[in-house]
Image (cartoon, rainbow, N blue to C red; front, top):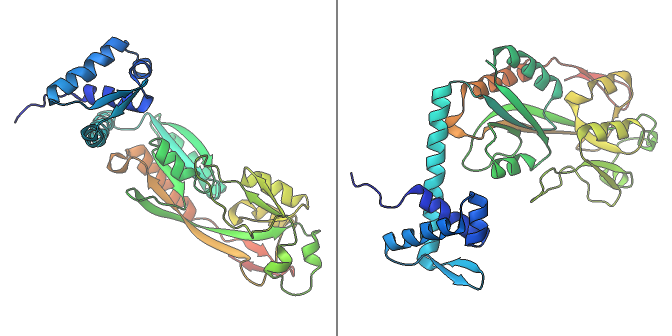
Length: 311
């Protein structure tokens, strides 16, 4: 087999020069001298037999051939890093650390029970837990390599298992004006009241879900904040049923009697951020999460007319 003439380090240096915008910036990012970076790129071009970069002003710009090769080199470096991480996982057995990204609509009681069961079986694996909303899980996958993401949105190219069906209920305090209405409440009437909306935690891209499209809304950063505000009598919201059982049972919240849409259901998935390199600790946690979600007891939901039904 013919040995490659160009090293992975040379491609890494070229990528840094392009990404950082110049040799000096790349040298700082790579903790190398500028002369070392310049020599590495010059040697790479000499070995290939044609230029990959041209200097325009103070910035280094790729030639057409350079653009083609840089794209391929990015895939090459990613595969090399993935291979090393796989070797580390196989060598270590259990992951020393597990990065878990959880959509806030995931049932909190099931999550806490699963984590409690996981801890004595984890063989010392440390858990880094991050809570996100809506497309925040996608952004976490884009920006890094979390071990596990619990989200309703599965991006292309990732392995995922369905883990739980989430039910949102439209609720408000019993003292809210909406409970003085006779009959069913339609969207036109609902839009005249203040709605609590949970902000998408993604920075680069964001989306609205469950918003009626009126100006009468307050945006908060978490399910807990929305819950506390709605319980206080300010506005209404669609909130995860699993997290508001106590408020429903105590009468602090009641389900709104809407024409349609008082209940909204969607699935959350366990997305394996490292694909086939997923370690045993991550797989164990997913099994525990699925088991706890499947064992959630049925509870009574109090409706607007004070009747109840089991869910």
